[in-house]
Each structure stands twice: as structure tokens, then as C-alpha cells.
Length: 234
Ligand code: ATP
Image 1 (cartoon, rainbow, N blue to C red):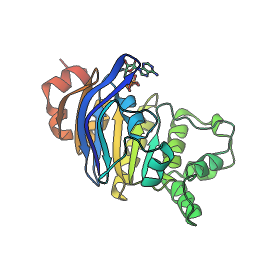
Image 2: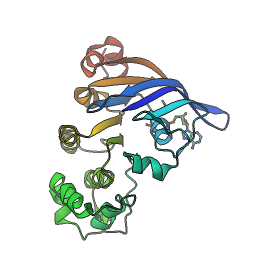
Image 3: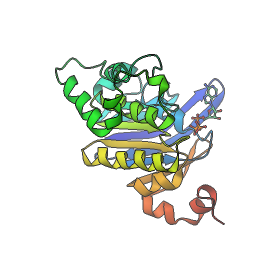
Image 4: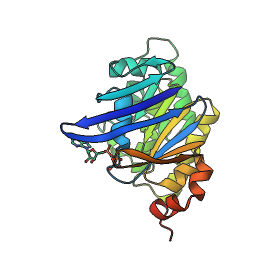
């Protein structure tokens, strides 16, 4: 579904992504893990069309999208739930959700609003409430619900577990599984390597802009290098 080949991305003279290659097959959960500044967010923002690559290619369902406008990439079926959630605090929950459907002209938007409410019932209970009053976990649910409102084929999640309690993190991760079971392909960026690798069909470890390791979620969880560097084990 997604093929990233030798991708390079720079901020001025600083190269943040240094020639990475990875792929996401339809139906998979694939994770990119790595410490602060490894280039994970930069990679997602480039796939979304918010940043431009300096080299390499990004193919989505066979079409090169390196130069495609961000709103067209959403229309092709790629949704991005960004780091920090970026909800609109003064707008209601429902208004935030409906903004996620901005690219659509079909008549099924109400149906998908219902689906978002089924996924996260608290969003229905608080649909008229200003989103800025929500806790971090609730805002994460809203950000994921909003991303799903574009009916994505590929959902990209940037650090969904950031700042959440262990219980809320479990809830979010189990929703990732539910979405996968419902047919959405997922690219998950996480600093919480353990939680991400438990879910993932496949994982890639990024260090300062390069992929240093890859394998199935199970293989990476069992790898000594990953255990030492990312799971805090000796
Ligand atoms: P984090 O989890 O902290 O977001 P990350 O793996 O997502 O880490 P990026 O945010 O992609 O990493 O950052 C990769 C590198 O690019 C870092 O060295 C960072 O300082 C640099 N960088 C990120 N955004 C900018 C920017 N707008 N201008 C200049 N440098 C940037």
C-alpha cells in the first residue's frame, strides 16, 4: 500500500531523514520507533505532503505522491493524526470530527460520525462540549476519530500514547487493533516501543534519520539491541 524508497528530508542544511526505505502492506500495523529527534514525525509529515522530500520516492497504492498536495493525499486515502493531537480547542467535539471529513463530497459523513461515536462513546456523550476541555486521552480519541472521518485506507498515528496514563494507553492501543480488524492499514509512530511492537506486524527502528533495524514486532521485541536501547533493560 505504501512504499517509501531512499527518502531524504532536510530542514535547511540539516538532514533529518537520511535515506530511509520501508513499506506498509495492506491490512498491516507497521510501527516506526526511535528516540526523540530520530526523524519519525518528519517522515509522517512528508508522507502527508506537509513537508517535501529532497530525494527518494513515496508511493501510495502504486502512485508516486512526493509532489502531491496535502489535501489531495487525504483524498487518496491517507489520514494523519498528528503529534500533540492538534484538535481545535474552541470547537465542539462534533465540529472537530466533521472537519476530518472536509475532503469528502459523498453523503455518508453522518454514517461515519456514528462510527466514530461507536468507536469512542465518550465523544457522543460530549459531542457539544468544547474540545479544549478534554483530558489528553480524550483529545487523543478525538484526534483519531477525526482522522477516521476521511475514511482513510492508511491511518498514520504520531505518538498516540504520549502523556497518557497506562490505562488510557491500553485503551488507545486496543482501538488501533479494532481499526485494523475493521480493515484500516496503520502506520504507527511511537516512542513507547513496547506497546507499539506488541501490536505491530512489522517494525522499523530509526536512529538519527536512518533505519538501523527492522523485523516483525515479535522479532524486535526479542532483540537484545531493542531491549537495551528502547525497553530499558540491561
Ligand atoms: P520526536 O518524537 O521528538 O518528535 P522524531 O523522531 O519525531 O522525534 P523529528 O521531529 O522528525 O523526530 O525530528 C528529526 C530531526 O529534525 C531532529 O533533529 C529535529 O531537531 C529536527 N527538526 C524537526 N523539526 C524541525 C524544524 N521545523 N526545523 C528544523 N529542524 C527540525
